[in-house]
Length: 111
Image (cartoon, rainbow, N blue to C red):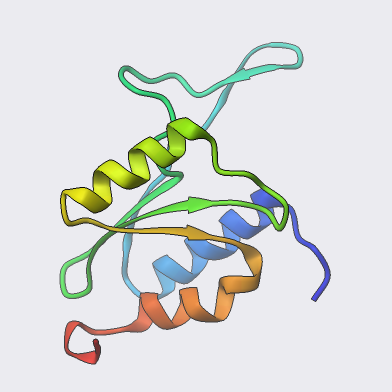
């Protein structure tokens, strides 16, 4: 499998989620001047890339990384906080696409 960009990977995960009936939330970055991009938000930085919710399959959060992407300290803070409060949280990479598809297709009683 050739390396895909994080943006292509994100698009693939969102397509899989929608295929399986998940609602998808992703905050898009905005260009504020040539070469300068930010993701406007209020609150702590590092929130996971995706929040997915399905009426029968639950709610989960996913931080998406390319093959060599590094999870920042702020991202780990969110991941740990969400996990500590009982949420389902993943760090997904392109090599995980088969597992991702299986998780998104899984019904609650398939655990």
